[in-house]
Length: 382
Image 1 (cartoon, rainbow, N blue to C red):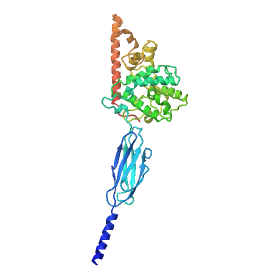
Image 2: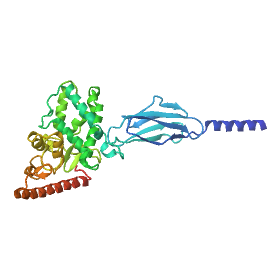
Image 3: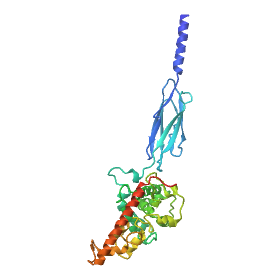
C-alpha cells in the first residue's frame, strides 16, 4: 500500500508540473520608429510554465509594416519585421497582434508609432544649414545641365518675362531672411517636399542628375511647373506626383512650417490668375511686399536700367529699394541718388529728398507691420 500511494502521488505531481500554465508576454510592448525605412525586433516569451505556439499578424498599418516569413513559432522566440519610410509629415500608427491559443494573456497587441518626416523649415539644428540654403552651387549646375540635356535655349524658360536665373536668385535671397520668417520656412519646406516627390517618380532614374535643380524650379510658380512638365514630356518623362509652389494667401505662406499643409490641402482650388498673384517668386508676385510686382522691378532695374542679377535681387528683395511702380515710394526718388549722394545741391532736390525719405520710412513701417502680422498668425483659415 505504501508503495502504491507513493507512486500515485509522484505521478500526479509530475504531470501537473509538466503541463504548467503558459503566459504569453512580449518585450517591448510598444515601439517608436524613425521616419526612415528600418527593421525591428520584439521578444516573445513564456512568463509562466509549460509551452505554447504563437502566431503574429499585422492588424493595422499593413501598407507600411511587414513581418518576416516565420510568422508562427514554437516557444520563445524573436518577432522580426520591417517598416517603410514615412513620407508624410504626420505620425502614423500600426498594430501587431501576437496570439498563443494555449496561453494566458493572449492575444497581445503591440502598438508601433512611426514619426512623420521632418521639414527643413522647422527641423533645423543649431548651426546646421538647411538643405536648400546649402546647395545653391549644385542647383545652378544642375539647372544648366537640365537646359542643355533638354535643348532649352530660351533664358526665360517659363515665358513670364523674367530670366530664370534672376528668379532663382530670389530663392537664395530667401535664405538671408530671418530664421523665423514664414516665407523662408515655406521655401525650405517646398524644396524638401519636391525632392521627396521626385524620388517617388517611376522614372526617377532619368531625373536624378537634375534632382536639386528641378526641386528648386518647381517651387517658383505654376508657370514654371507647366514649363518643366512640358519639357520632360517632350522626352517621354511624366511627372505623376504633386509638387509645391510657395504660395501666400490671407497672410499665410505655404507649405506651412506649422503642420505641413499645402495650398491644395488647406484651401479650395483657385483659378490660375489668383494663384499666380499670390506666388511670391512668380512674375506677378511681390517678393518684398512693397506693392511692386517682381516683373515691374525686373523691367525697371534690368530691362530699362541694364542692372545685374544682384541689382534685381536688391530691388525685388528690399522694399526700400525701388524698381517699379506700386504702393511703395515713387520711383522718381531713385533718380535723386548716384551712389549714396544726392545728384545735385538744389533746393528742389533737397525738398524732394525729404519727401522721399518720409515715403521710404512709411514703406518700411508697412513692411514691418506685414512681417509682424505674418509671424503672429498661428492658425490657418479652413
